[in-house]
Image (tube, rainbow, N blue to C red):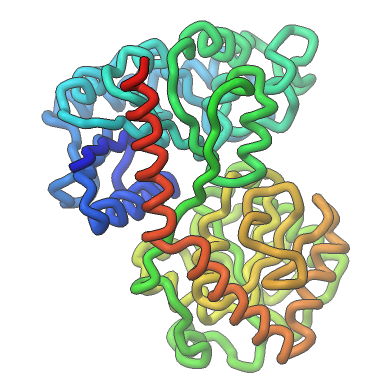
Length: 413
C-alpha cells in the first residue's frame, strides 16, 4: 500500500488545510495510507499528527512571533500579505524522517513550520503543492511585481518598500538551498505559468492538478429554502462575496466598492461572509455581513441561496470558494488571468471580465442575472463541469499517478 505523508501548517485552519483534508480523505477512500503532519492540530482525526507537547507549541509560537517582529521592524512595505522567512530550524524535519512514508507531500509550510535549509534533508521523494506564491518569491506569499521572474535585485525593488530588503535575502537563500529534486503541483493554469516563468523553478517538472470536491457534501440545495434559512428576501438577487481575510487588496473588495459606486444594482443585495471588511459602509448597495461560516452544510446552503458569486481578486491561486459555489449551481464573475479561470468559462458557466475592468465586471453581473433561462442554464453547466472535472476519484488518480511516477524516477537514480 502506497504511504503518503502530507505536511501542512494546520489541519483545519485556512484554505490550504481544507484542500489537504479533502485530498487526504479522497486518497484514503482509494486505499492509500494517508497521514497529515501539522504544527497546529485543531481536529480529532487520528491520521493527523500534531505537536507532541505543550513545549513544542510554545516554541512554534515564539518563532512565529519573532518572524513577525522582524518583518514589522526591518522592512516597510505596502504589501499587506503574509510574510514567512522559514529561517529557523524546527523538529518537523526529524518527525518527517521518522515517519514511514513513501512520498512526502508538502503543502503550506509558512509560519516557520520548517526551515528552507531543512527541506533538502527530507529523506523521501518530495511532492510540493504551491498554494500561493511563497515558494517562488522572497518572504512574501503574494507579489505584485515581476521580481520572481527577473530575480530580486536592488534595481527592481518596489518604490514603496524601504529598510532591509528581506525579500531579496530570502529569495537568494532559496536559490541556494532549493538545489534538490522535487515535483511541483500547480493548482491552476495561471499558477502553472507563473511557476514556469519564475527564476527559481522554470526548469523544474510542474504538474497541474486542481483541488478536489466530495459531491456527497457539495451539491445544489433548494434555492427558496436556502434563502429562507438565511432570512434573505426572495424577491432580491443575491450577490455573494467571501474571503478569510480582508487586510490586503488581493481579494479586490475595494474594486467592488468602486464598482457599486458607479453602477446601480437596486433589486440586488450583496452578502459578505468570512473576514469583516473595515470599509463596509462605503458600499453603495444593499448589503449584509453574516460573519464566518465554518461548517460545510452552512456554506453549501449559502452558495445555493446566492444568484452569483463575485470573485474580483487581483491575484488568486485557484479560488476554492468559486468551485464550491459552482458545485451548488452558482455561477461566478471573475477577472481574466486568475486561478478561477480554470473552472469559469466565459459565457458558458460564468463570466470572465477583462482584468481589473470594473465596467466589464458589472456587465458580467448583469449578463448572468438579466435572463432567467440563461441563469438556469449557467447553473446546470456549473454543476456538470465540477462533477466531471473536480471529483475525488479523477483527481485522486492524478495524484496517485504523480506519486508513482516520482517513485519510479527515484528507482532509476
